Amino acid sequence: MSAGPAAINSSDLLEAARVSKAWPFEEARKLVARLEKSGETNPEVLFETGYGPSGLPHIGTFGEVARTTMVRRAFELLMPGVKTRLLCFSDDMDGMRKIPDNVPDRAFLEPYLHMPLTSVPDPFTNEYPSFGHHNNAMLRRFLDTFGFEYDFASATEYYKSGRLDPILKRVAECYDEIMAIMLPTLGPERRATYSPFLPISPKTGRVLYVPLKKVDAAAGTITFDDEDGEETTLPVTGGHVKLQWKPDFGARWAALGVDFEMFGKDHGPNMGVYDSICKALGGRPPEHFVYELFLDDKGEKISKSKGNGLTIDEWLTYAPTESLALYMFQRPRQAKKLYFDVIPRAVDEYYQHLAAYPRQDWKERLGNPVWHIHGGNPPEIELPVSFALLLNLVSASHAHDKDVLWGFISAHVPGVTPENHPELDRLVAYAIRYFDDFVKPAKVFRAPDEVEVAALETLSEKLGTLAPDADGATIQNALLDVARAIERYQDHTKKSPEGGPGVSVAFFQMIYQVLLGQERGPRFGSFVALYGIDNTRALIGRVLAGEDLSQG
Image 1 (cartoon, one colour):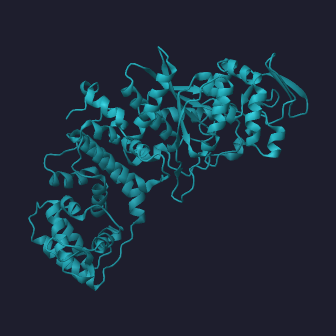
Image 2 (cartoon, rainbow, N blue to C red):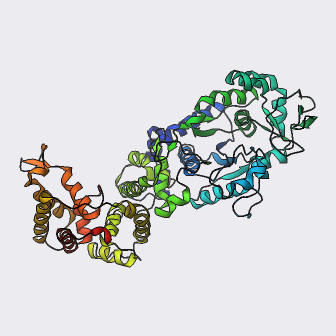
Image 3 (cartoon, one colour):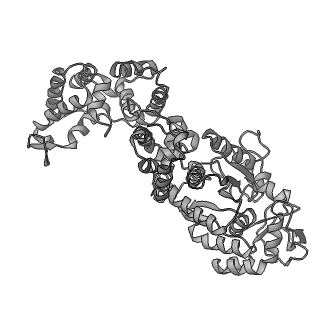
């Protein structure tokens, strides 16, 4: 079944969208209700994402844009003809409060502490006017890689150009009301010095966290003591000051008319503060979606400044972009670890969803991640070999050349070539890289004991009775026949088709540990079919001869 544009306006599709339980549609329906309540005749629905460029963009930052885009596309299906826009807003006027761990020369940045990020020199290449410009460029490059449709906004440009002047004057007029919202959320010491306005010192260029001596709403100015103690008055307009981050959220929503913004769980407790400030300034708070944070392999929160998570470039070195988009779609309200081990599964799950899509009705399609990843028009691709099998093939064959791997693949799936299946060819290259960098260094082979030697001998003999072109299911059944006859591998909690005991997973764990130096892998029968029965028997023969397979 085609998923082309001609089907997009079908009544079945629209009805499925109205009841879909996929989280982007649930969020989109909130926006539909918001729009209907507003009664606007020619609306534009504004989606916003925020980015703090204090460190290099990481996958969590990217995921926010990906997920927001998924909600945007779901809304556009529900409300065709309504204009939408996605604004990626960078808070690049924020002061550099600490030096990130992952810059090449930390000492180089020390003189620029507390200066706006767009006033801090680029520590990487000197290609960009500032640290903030560099990190903004990295974000935009990654977003463009995925083909996102978005407008980029720089806080520095918005403040200095005067685009935020009206709301800044409004903050001065509502100063007491905003202070009444903020002060109860602060500790005693912070309350004594707090102000929603952060002046930028005209002498040092640093963002100052100082108490204000006077706020003149009529003149649109603030008065404070500069770092040298001299009393100074600055206009709140024209980029001379910026807002503290909590008031900045609410003020930006009010100034720009933001309709939807999602943010991480760490912002959740402040959501009411943002909303209250937006209302105090005459705005309508947007619809929110709070997602869980990504964790590193130790279960710690990923931080841009620490650089302890995967970067987008790192993921894309080992897997296609669509697998990353799938990881963003899945369970956004559940904390997930984000490190290299999750990549292979994400790759295979993406292609499984893609293969299922043409066979599904509209209700199932709208719950299928690939509808959201591809904006409603996923390609028709079905892989003859999974990524997990490719990794095992590299492992067993010790191949580092795509041509060698394609020799196995073409023998297993006649007629499939790199030319007529470029998607699979792309995965072959990813598999070689991933194996070399992550699987190979972690491989630990062990020698088989007496029971395992006998099992492997029987297994080799059994494989020798099969046709050279036996399929994965036939080979898997042969493996099970061997295991059922060995007491160690009998699982009496399961039943075989003949009514006897089933097979313990320990049998397949033994095969992977002894033959491939891994703890687990995909269905072994499928691997043997791909690698070849004779090659598998030769591998078993090397083990039985006492060879050290870790040497290749």
